[in-house]
Image 1 (cartoon, each protein chain N blue to C red):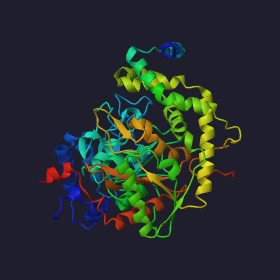
Image 2 (cartoon, one colour):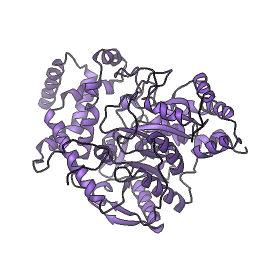
Image 3 (cartoon, each protein chain N blue to C red):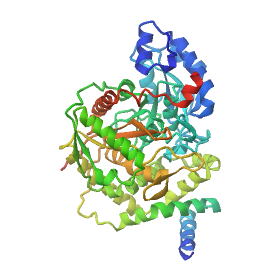
Image 4 (cartoon, each protein chain N blue to C red):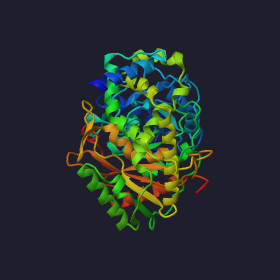
Length: 454
Length: 67
């Protein structure tokens, strides 16, 4: 093969192995070598395990991902490794074993080659706090890769792997995908098995694929969802655009790139309409409260006592602060959730998709993870959840796809939401935008990859 | 300053219910979090949602059954 196997897409790797053109053992070795070569600059990989991966490859059944290496976020039990949730240890008592996600990957023939770095306990959208150290962005390693699935997005963007598994409880697949210039899909809630998943208790969270483009996300997403995400037609889709609610107070370059992406989609045959989401003004707090508190009943007191001294001061403080939330606020957040779910059900009778930016601003510096918006400077976490939370509160699928770059070369992501169960429609629309933009954003390699190739 | 003292007292008293305490760094983080999220929480608590019926048997995998 003329191209380095790690520069192939996930589906190209699968096809090349199936046709005998690519030796999966060589691919595994190339993957491990590339992790060793490139990862020190970004710290996206928490752990790799050549012997266990080689054993998985030797026993891999025929399947859509036969012999293809993938990475998984540090939230899933593997037979040889307990997940740590980005911390010293996970406090939920999840030990080593076969998680549901591991089984789906194994049964598809995939080879788990690494565990990816993540924001500590998943409690952040930047990825700069982790027991493994901060995760850097392949487009600028001094900037955040995002969170909480930052390692999965950064490893895919840097072409350490062609696909990785992330999870998303408030935007945690879409945020790092937006920051790192890759395609991330939060599946409709409830499609993945939650055994062996540290946050399996979440009514807001689920797993999903993070890949370079829509067709790779379709392949890995189908494996994770346990059903084919069939390709369909995106032309003619009606897209609702809540301009007054989710297109305000944005970094100007983000706003411009996302607006241009909608124009390209419209040129390609979709139709844009103004939309409004009732209850959206309470999105941030209605997301943050259950997201931070749903885990409390699942936390083992003895485990938290063991883990707490090793936590970052920020996360240690936040885990205590959440204990002081008034119960009335949590119950009212539940009422907002009911309102938002009805509002989206009503909107999806009119529209096939909803669209707004994945993030309000490009990736902030690791040293000071704040972003500048027209209304002022804010911690990135605070403003990101405004754009990410609705898909989690309602359960609908949502996707971030690359749609541009800032003048300084940082990726920008557009977010799409679809009705419950219509995960494949998001991929159809993403593929249409890729075609309309001649794949210039999904095929762009970060400087880290270009420097290494030179 | 008075508000800060009250907040500290609230935190210390609240955490003591769980047998926990907070050091100075943790208190500073909690104060910063309260500045960001406190107003949103208070606005939620003050909002009138009495006309929004609860969703019985919430199932996030599908659209709400009732209109």
